[in-house]
Amino acid sequence: MSAIKMPHPQTLIYLHGFNSSPQSRKATLCAAYLAAHHPDVKLLVPTLPIDPLSAVAEVAKIIEEQSLLSHVGLIGSSLGGYYALYLAERYGLKAVLVNPALMPYKLLVDYLGINVNQYTGMTYELQPRHIDDLLSLQTKAPSLPKNIFVVTQTGDEVLPYQEAITLLPLSPFWIQPGGDHAFVDFDCVLPAIVHFLLAPSRI
Image (tube, rainbow, N blue to C red):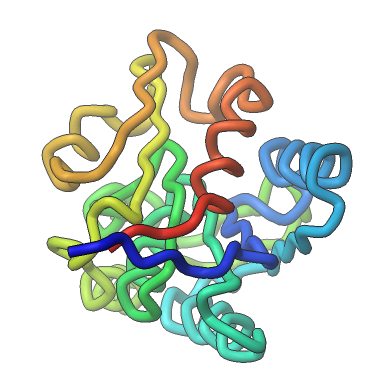
C-alpha cells in the first residue's frame, strides 16, 4: 500500500497536567519554541477544568472548531497526556505524550478531597466521581499507535516510565535517562516533538 500524505497540522493544542495551568513551564517553552521556529503554527493552551468529562468536552470543542481535523496536533503532559491519547483516538489525530499518566484513576485517588492549584491558588475538590469519569476515558489500545509519540524521563518520581512502554508498546518512544516528572531540559526535546506533529502522517 502506498503512503498517504496528510496535510501538516497548523494548530497544536497543549494539554496541561493535574494541578497545573497554561502558565506551566512546559507550556511556555512550547509557545516560545513555536514563536521562534514555526511562527505559522498556532498554539492553543486551554485551562482544563478539574472535572475530566468537562475537560475533554472543552478540548473536543476546540478541535471541532478547526477547519480540518488533520490540521490539529496534540501535546499532553501527565494527566494531559491521558486526555490527549483519548482525543487522538477519537479524532484520528497525532499526539505527543510527555511523562503521561496513563492510569490516573489509580494515581489520583490519593488526592481526593480539597486541593490548591499551585499556579492559580484556586481551591477545588477532587471527588470520587472524577475518578470514575477518568476510568471511563481509558484508551486501551490506540488504533493508530504510530501516531502516538511518548516522551519520558526515567527519573520521573511520580510515574514509572515503564508504565507507558507496557501500555503503548507499538508507539515510538523517546526515553531520556534521569530527569523528573516536570521533565528536565524539556526545551531539548521540543524539536523532536514538533517535527513529529508537523510531519505528514503515513498510513
